[in-house]
Image 1: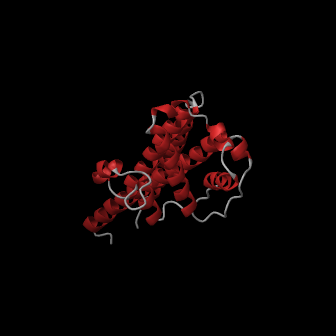
Image 2 (image 1 turned 90 degrees about the horizontal axis):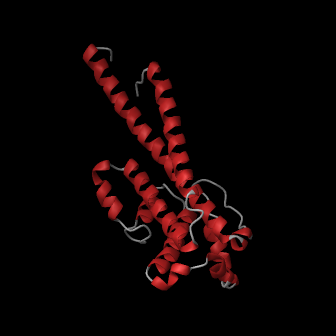
Image 3 (image 1 turned 45 degrees about the vertical axis):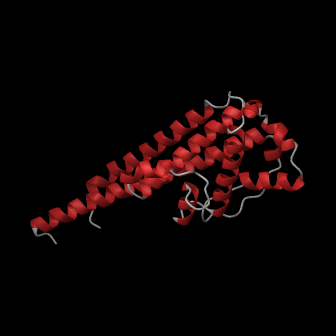
Length: 204
């Protein structure tokens, strides 16, 4: 794969800048949710997470089917974006479980107007021992290739913080992977262009 040395530095700088801008943008957006009530926080975090995984999938496949991917449900076990990402090796089993469980919570809230006053701490406090274990396990996801994370009791004591941090970590991981994927495509396109130039010039 031919690549000009003079192109490497600007490409590297562009990648670093793109990752930094994306991560900073997500942090700023999520931070703005902290003053929301629990119902609004969960709805907004879920929407941001769904948008981030859509962008990741598009970066790995083709922008021509972006509209199709965006219309897919997030957590459907057969045709959801989460299932697609899992089958493509972009997320781990534990990340997929997080997506599914978080979507289940969000869906339960959004379909009943009575849930607008939802309190996450009261919800977690009312869970039985097994349900609390599931909650902690949901938040203790690990990325592909990473060792299994230990459960954190604070995720039950401070569930709002635990959920916020888990979504933030996952959104940032998706954002970084998306930018790496887009840059890889750009490098390959540049390499193809250089190769064609060399052929025309009789260089290879």
